[in-house]
Amino acid sequence: MMLMDSVFIIVIFLINGYEDVNRLFNKPWMLGDIAFDMFLIENHLPFFILEDLFKASEIASRFDEECSVIKLAYKFFKDDWNSLLSTEGILEEMKASEVAHFVDLQAGVKFKLSPSKSLLDMKFDRGILEIPLLRVQDSTEIYFRNLRAFDKCDILDQDHIGDYISMINFLVISPKDVEILVENRIIENWIHDNEAVSTVLHDISKPNDLSQNNSIFAGLV
Image (cartoon, rainbow, N blue to C red; front, side):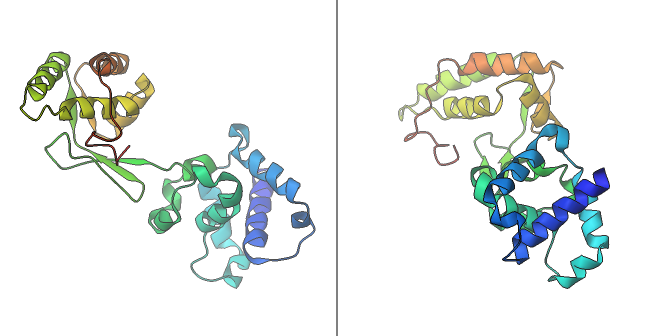
């Protein structure tokens, strides 16, 4: 069944990418149904199977050398799922071995630990969000509340620490989000409890009001 589904998907991609006339594609509502079915969790195929079958097939040799399942999938899903797709410019940097399935291929943000020692030095470029290391421990809440109070007392009345806390809080909605940042080495969890980390960050962020105009992370958001 997986072999049949994989071959069907590859043929659909190739026809969509390179052919103008086909009975199936003269029925556009069928394409929408097919695209939707591909996204259902119960229908997910491991991406490496599609990639390996495509490379092994004789039909692949008929197309240009730059043709890949990643590019064909992007072109197929672009019309219906454009708002969810990564920008086309980063397709060259994607590796089929790192893609789990179609939904994973469309995840627009990847996390990377920034080498910067400044917490405020966050950067987003070509689908990668770089964030400096945040160590969360028992004293973290007191530490940030004091830093923020000091920041507010400055003659410029800036609130860069408040902006930082709000930015991190946007990313940490649940303990699962903490787990993702821990896995990417962005958060060091010295509390050893992901739910406790999310609670601490939410509590610190409660009085914050991130301005779209004045925040140092306005462009990043």
